[in-house]
Length: 174
Ligand code: SAM
Image 1 (cartoon, rainbow, N blue to C red):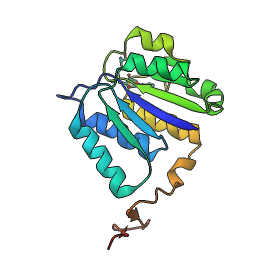
Image 2 (image 1 turned 180 degrees about the vertical axis):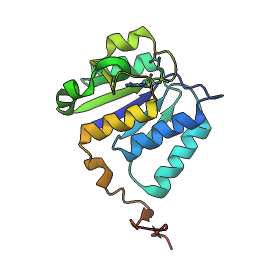
Image 3 (image 1 turned 135 degrees about the horizontal axis):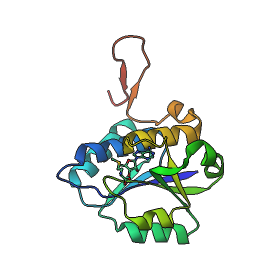
């Protein structure tokens, strides 16, 4: 399955850290790309830097027009999953979503426009309490992949050798 994450409503003056974390979680938990609504070269650079050092083929784009992206994605046969505390229970819909070939997972910042709820194939709640886009995305992807994404080999220059204590990192360029 190919997974695009769409980060809505990024405000460069206050969301740099959280949007970076959305991107890091997207990559580490098995998504293929992130599209950021809004321009932020700093966020894009820091995510690309992680990909360069830690591997994988995760791609990053900012300054996208979210309505156009959602329409284009839907019209090309992809399915849209909007993560929101108001949505259906994740356990009720994850099986259906797992059978899709391509999904776009939408996460918001503050208030998400009503159009997003309408265009989504599924509005999905990770619990019906307010929390965070980072947590919602991590739990969603983990449920989607049933935990298997955590053992994926990213083939990067840097690789952690799991250790009970301390930090062991292999740098393949040395
Ligand atoms: N009240 C806001 C709204 O209108 O959606 C919540 C904003 S919340 C700080 C930012 C994002 O986190 C939301 O747009 C949603 O994507 C995600 N989120 C927060 N709680 C969630 C939950 N329980 N289930 C799924 N997604 C959630």
